[in-house]
Length: 90
Length: 192
Ligand SMILES: [Zn+2]
Image 1 (cartoon, chains in turn brown, orange):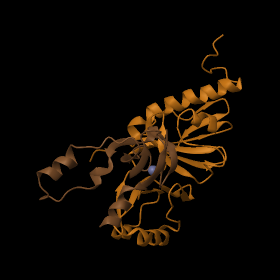
Image 2 (tube, each protein chain N blue to C red; image 1 turned 90 degrees about the vertical axis):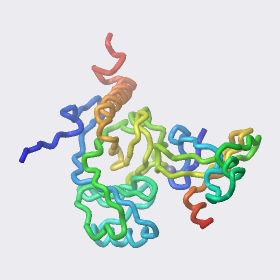
Image 3 (spheres, rainbow over the protein chains, first blue to last red; image 1 turned 120 degrees about the horizontal axis):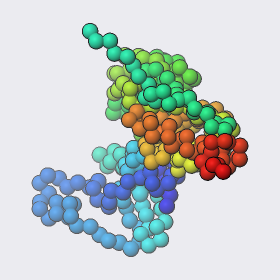
Image 4 (spheres, rainbow over the protein chains, first blue to last red; image 1 turned 30 degrees about the horizontal axis):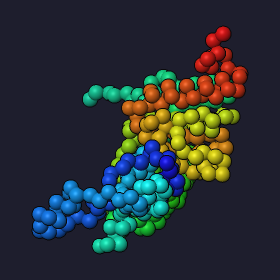
């Protein structure tokens, strides 16, 4: 499996660490209520198809990436810097 | 005051040669990691160039020359090798002295790419990893910085604590390449 880092280009999967679904970027407000926090911390979709995930380019440039991967075919459909997405949001 | 003597991370194991390949220690002098403060990337790049006379390297590139060199060293991260960094740069950058943190070697000679290809997942093909290119990746499962210094010459850096393992792993790879070439007395597997 190869993953394209927006900074480093296409690299071997062994350089990356998998964190999980990209929901971690959508942290609820402190007073959002128990249900929102329960969803954020514990409840995950298990889609068959395109999925947004957080990967860390741990043994490469050190950047956090949002990678879109098809869980059925393992096709890598794109990747973006998590920091760029956060800055675009704020 | 106690007089302390600086010791090499390689503790007398280098240089070593196997077949056509040579592995030697690089005394890089002062090494400083620079990271731009938030929103200061452009200001830092121009102040850096003004202060040290070499470009702030973009991703995967190096600038300068031996003795005053800047390596792209990761996301928002450049390593200055050689000079003491200009103190005024701290307006724009976080600066961390890493002089004692790394073991730095040079591996060179005909077939050097074959030796490195045994150790790293990087695409080292001529068209992909040219002179002046640098990458953060792995060497024998250790986090590393790999830089192409010349046509048949690469610089490899690992954390100082892994310097001994680096020498062992590169030596085994060099012996493997020499054995393939068929010309080395002490190559692995050549005991008969
Ligand atoms: Zn990267």
